[in-house]
Length: 108
Length: 120
Image (tube, rainbow over all chains, first blue to last red; front, side, top):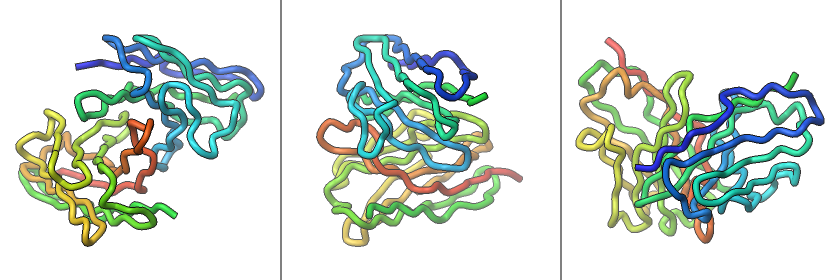
């Protein structure tokens, strides 16, 4: 089974700064099958990025995804206070979903 | 507007059973694969089970195989999760999630979640 490892565990940055979140897979992942979510406390996950780099409907363009093979990343170009949340990567394989353990983004 | 509303959560003793429901509206429910995903207290997301649009194909995480049963009723626009032989480690918020179509291989819409607590 593919294991997704996200780093760092926590990212603490100021508004306007750039955040780069990493998602590393234990074996190669089809880029089409790599998805990113945002989850705020007490809320359900929200789809951010699918196909590794395609923003979901209504997602601001400060969010971008990239990567291939075993290394993927989510970048928030200019942090806003409302971006404070947990971020999860997820891959689809053999009809099941696997999630990374998440990265917490804190806004100073 | 797409809506997914879970119900049926609650407190249950170890070894007990519970059935969760997810009522869907605002889209052609019978055309989508549906999933259950759970999140233990203070923990990350864990995929639990999925069922294809017609119900013909069903998949489970190893952690729940043999204890949980997913089903759907397309006439009622509803998804279910029957949980039995519950353990303390099954305590979690359970989300139903619609699997996207086209290039979306993940959950494009999620319910608000139902809390299941397994404790004596």
